[in-house]
Image: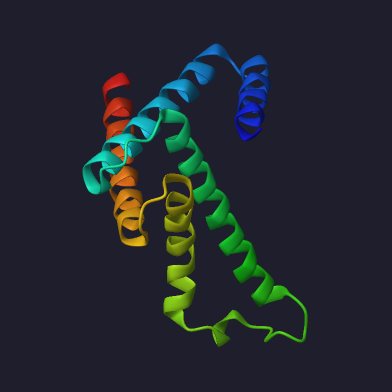
Length: 139
């Protein structure tokens, strides 16, 4: 069901966006999923499909969004909760998006938490590096 939703969203974007943007979106998805596949195979021996890799990235981004919304809720939420996020320690504030990002890889790929953190870190760095290199080459 989730894959049908992704296909539906992609088709909506493809009909509304210019052709160059659509091809860029496809290429970016392939690069990111290939980076996740390579890192997962290297780090933990798991060989996910491109769909599982994209699901891991998407789930990770959803968890980061939830972590951010939770911190926003603590900062500006109900008066029964401390009205300032300063009540939380700085490591909790800094680590909650990282834990959310890692948890997406943990759930989608089934790797251990340490392997998921390493996969998240390496695949993000590899994807950013490849996309930046392609951007400078293309112009």
